[in-house]
Amino acid sequence: MIKKLSTQKTYKHLSLDERETIALDLAAKKPMETIAKNLLRHPSTIYREIKRNSADKYDCQYRANRVQLKNNIRKKNAHKRVRLKNDFIITYVETQLKNDLSPEQIAGRLSIDFPGYKTNHESIYLYIYNEAPKFKEFLRKKHKKRQKRGSILKRRGIIIKNKVMISERPLEINDRTEIGHWEADAIVSRKSKAALSVICERKTRLVKINKLDSKTARNMSKNINYRLSRLPVKFRKSITYDNGTENAEHEKINRVLNIKSFFCNPYHSWEKGTVENTNGLIRYYLPKKTDFSKISEAVIKEIENRLNNRPRKCLNFKTPSEVFTKFALNH
Image 1 (cartoon, rainbow, N blue to C red):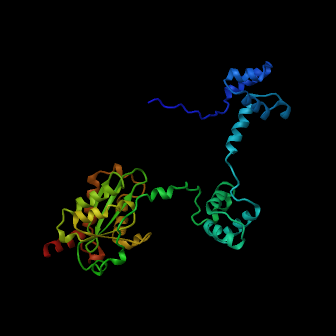
Image 2: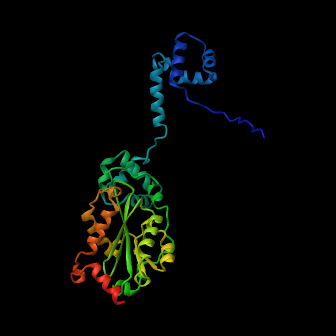
Image 3: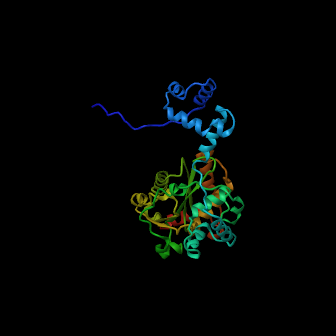
């Protein structure tokens, strides 16, 4: 089947080479039609180019490099627009920033305080970062650079489904009265994509640490299934997670291990304090900025053994391994 050719007209801006040809032909006093024909352009294109940069208007000859520079400046400024429409809005925004209001609060209050005026928080942020950087100090987080639009949404692309919140966790888990309830977390590296998976038993503080190629939900679930599936069923009853996207496959873990999952409230990672405290102990051996990709499995295993054989005050100075082994033998 023969495709029908498109009849849509296209336009391409004059290049520096074309402008140099125009300058030479004008100096040679060639007609506009001849210049257009030589460049395979429509005569109106050449007329507009000369009119926009005419010698009469600027009291000087047509110079290709000067015209190209002006054109670049026009292109750069073509899509710029004033972020805050007038001086009244600018004054209002600056005053409210000094009164500790956030850009979102300011945008919401403007139309209430002064009907007929309006703006939005994104415009206020752009005004601060592009035109009035001195007002960055009045922002909550005082970021030096503006975060790219949409970047937060991209990070939140994975939604954790069917979460059971920690408020519904049974008392025997909260009170640490029985063994088999775990907390899981991931420690990331600034130097590479590699991460550590950390799972810690709440009552005995026994920890299991593994290296992940990257902090993904699939890697996290595979690791947890591997480490806990080797334990008797009575020693794997529940896992408590935070809301990181690496925990999105919790239902898969539940099916494989026949276990229950619970989630901390958003931004309440301290609600799984056992594993958070253990992460701090791991950081003693692997400080921040450590490249986990360069840490061998043998080193990670050694750290795990050291922590599991470390006397803990909360265990009456017994070690996690001693307490866990005692439960394993007596139950």
